[in-house]
Length: 357
Image (cartoon, rainbow, N blue to C red; front, side, top):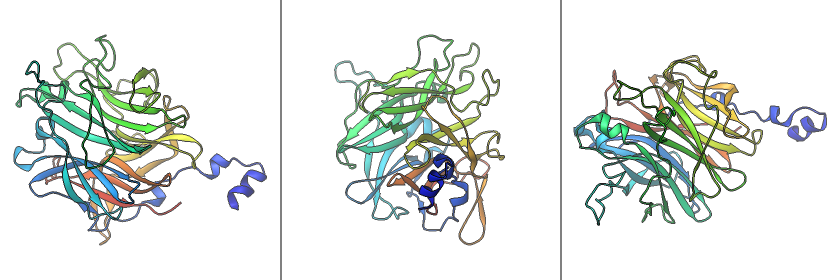
């Protein structure tokens, strides 16, 4: 009734429906955590299936190899399930292990050693799982990191089997002056209103004299169907201004199109230097009408560096944000915690409750 009244008197319906995630964040209950004994757990990607269950895809690697560079050399994507959105989640199997060598040549596939950082949605009877893969010598962090490419796996059952093409769906650009000439990684994909897919990806440029390359930037690719092909598009993605000289502003987005909040794309990202949320390491919100040109949303801050626990205490730093969506509305903020110094503990995933709008 209130929405109808706003529209009737000539006020903006989009303004009345603007998304404010910060006001909906609730304290984290102790049970809303997914961990796996003996493993670092990272970057949970939740999705509700048509079976009414909640499916969680996540990266894991042995605790014994250390957090970093262990993730870049040993990660695999695993699968867990729950009857409830907040969990508890039960490990089922490994969704995407490292791929065996090519039968004809014995050479490694592009994702022959590592699968990592899943992003998933369900569409017309299939689960679409986007991920980063790499290969290397099992020792060199720069080698594995620079071989990062983006792949897609498809299954009708979240427990598999998964089918994945032999080649990445997004590869590096041949032009070494391009922003994505060294590696492409960490895909964030969502369905477009026309049934196609918008894919936002992280990239690094080749830079002479720097084995790990130069600046970190974000690119976009669009496909008419989830299966592809994915065509790179020009855009201005998570940048404060053209030609900025910073190393990186925003990182690791979760992207979706919202029907109920202004008919636009949104992205929750990590605020690397604190330009948008006001706190380095916090989470912030961007918006876009076309998925290619992004601006900070009106309610930019999503989460500060610290987040509240239900016992009244606080913890620090949520990374790799993802939203669990139900009927087009976010109901939980998932994220990865611990791992990196100075905490250095075994990493896990948390599910932070969101109030209804």
